[in-house]
Length: 91
Figure 1 (cartoon, rainbow, N blue to C red):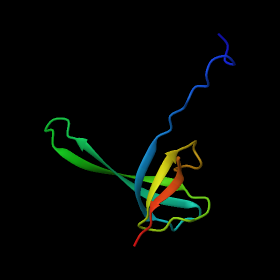
Figure 2 (figure 1 turned 60 degrees about the vertical axis):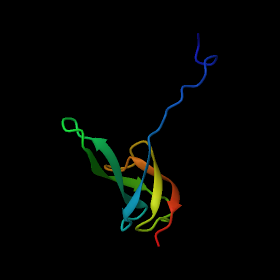
Figure 3 (figure 1 turned 90 degrees about the horizontal axis):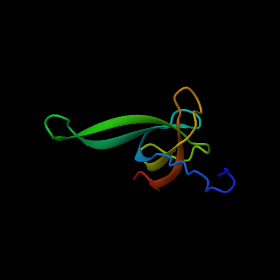
Figure 4 (figure 1 turned 180 degrees about the vertical axis):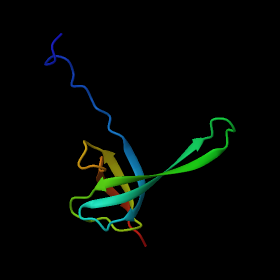
């Protein structure tokens, strides 16, 4: 079976939602993503925060905005995410 006849393999890219913490850099955001995980031993739910460096081509997101980001190829030393859309503007 050749590649032309088989269906194209879909690459499920990771999608995260978070709050913009910083937009001081040009075309780059820092987004804080919270996730709730169960503690391995005690079972209590704990929140973990991860800071992601996100590519924002048009510098359109502001601090406090809720955004959706998509995983992408490495764009720089730290940037591995791209701004997908702005879900909610900061008040």
